Every structure is written in structure tokens, then in C-alpha cells.
Amino acid sequence: MVEDRTFLGPLELTNGRWGVGDATRPDTHWVELRPDGLYQHEPDSEGQLIPWSRIMNGIWITWGKHARNTNSRGQYTLQGMVATRDGGWMHTTLRHPYEDHQLRFDQHTRPYRAVDALRLESLLRQLTTEGKLPLLGDPEWVGRAAAHLAGGKNRWITSRALRQVTAEALAAAGPGSP
Image 1: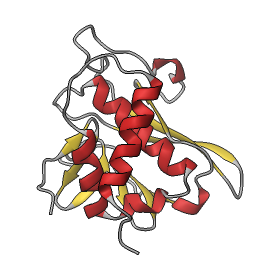
Image 2 (image 1 turned 60 degrees about the vertical axis):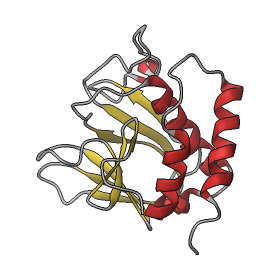
Image 3 (image 1 turned 120 degrees about the vertical axis):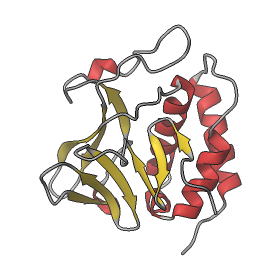
């Protein structure tokens, strides 16, 4: 079992649940990874479930207060950290009906390493490409994949390096539970 307070950028295990964003503070936006899909938690709302089967293309992350900040994908400091503290968005295209969709998350008080955020995004895209997004609903599997991707040097990484480390993480995490 992976211990609580394990994280990969904005992805964190809290109280046995994996989510993107800060689930520990009241009145925050965050996205929970459930067996049936992505669940948007938001203040003063029952939330919203996006089933895995509706996610059509890769999931990408942008940073900033507003979802329209799609050009804010690469705001990182010279020390290799995510530059903004205004929160972030997970973007994807959904099917039935077709629509662009954004899921909001509030950042943790801790800073995010750029390499961890980029590795998380690479994992989300690769799982979408391979049709394996439901693996994100298996907390044990996510723990193994996140543990493989977390850590390491915080340096400039290429698309090729991201694809390679993601493939290694998928292999290391195994097939997941049925």
C-alpha cells in the first residue's frame, strides 16, 4: 500500500483517494480519480462525474486562474518549479456529445516541480492513447506508477525522455486490477 501524502506534482494520495489538486483544504476545487471516471469536486456543489469512456483524447494541464489560459502550459521558474500559484486546469475533449471540457483544481501550498507535472501529463496522455484510462481508478496501480515517476533530477526533459519514463512507469505499475 502506498502511504498518504505521496504525490506527483498536483497528483496526491489523501485519505486513500488519489486526486489532482488540494483535497485537504475546505472549499477547494480538485479532481478525484475514481473507478468510474474523473470526479470534479467544487465548493457548494455536488460535483460532476466524467466517465472514462467519454474521454476522447489526451488530458493536458494548464496553469492559471482561468481555463482560457491555454498558453500557460509552460510557466516554470529557472529552478524548475511551476511558476504560477493560481491553480490549474485539466483539459480534454469528451464524446457523446462532443465537447471541450475543463476540470479545475486548486494547488497545494507546496510548490510543484516542473518535471513531476510534465510526467503526470505524459502519463495521462499515454493512458488515453492506449485506452487504459480506467487504470487511474485503481489506487494501488496509481501508487505504483506515481512512485516510479516521482523523484529523480529536476532538469530539462525532452518529449522522448517523457515517453520513455512513462513507458517504464506503465511497465513497472503492472496490469492493474480487473
